[in-house]
Image 1 (tube, rainbow, N blue to C red):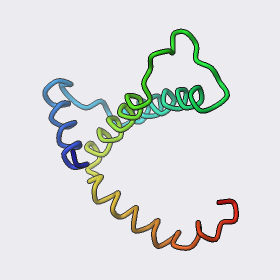
Image 2 (tube, helix red, strand yellow):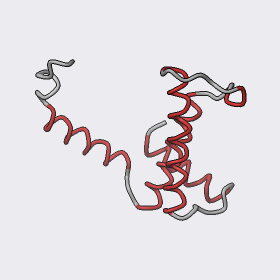
Image 3 (cartoon, one colour):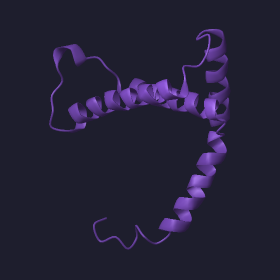
Image 4 (spheres, rainbow, N blue to C red):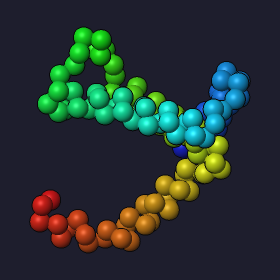
Length: 107
């Protein structure tokens, strides 16, 4: 699935199953919540914290997909073509960081 196809599929799902988009501000709050859930799994899987009994069974990929879903909703609502935005972001990072990381002694 391409990014464009993902944007189209989310839009179709929202309009048929979800009835309508939540407001942009609500979706921003939901995105923050979803990122927090992803962070919780990362901290417990790769960090020093341990899972609580009620947290077991959550999947990293599912939490990442939740973050992506809400991000796509926000892009659709605000008219952002994520393919173009990502291509432009690659260009920006390539120009800005062409030598930066190679010269970083920490890496």
